[in-house]
Length: 175
Image (spheres, rainbow, N blue to C red):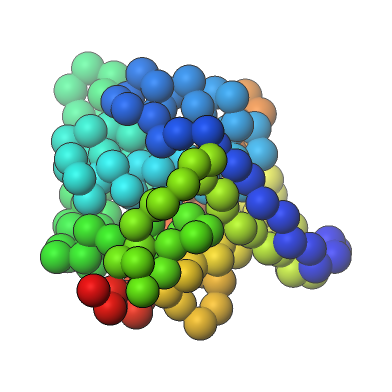
């Protein structure tokens, strides 16, 4: 069993578009927390631009969370997309709460770069089954960190297996 630990990941800037996003994922997706950073980035993008965000999310998901659409195009299940939309509707700030320095007091605005993401693990993090790892992401709008489970693929990259807790409500911005 793994020991409890905390750590941070930093990213110089949020990627603009799917090409930059794929470059970021290629650079950091070989760690569970790197893939989790990419998930948060994709959710932030989804809250601004659903089409681009959907493409980013599809790049990150475990194959079990994807459906084939047309020629070799795999997309996130419609039920997942509807759930993301339903949970975040009118709450475009929600996913920015996973970046350090945001708060209800500043409407979860990202005030400086690099963006810093805070993670933790516990003694059960690596006990999730074959090639799976559960980590916890700190949210400035929640009382406790939110779990994300990732799965290691044959190519060494991590994909998102379970992330629904990131979609739970947070404290409403104060301004």
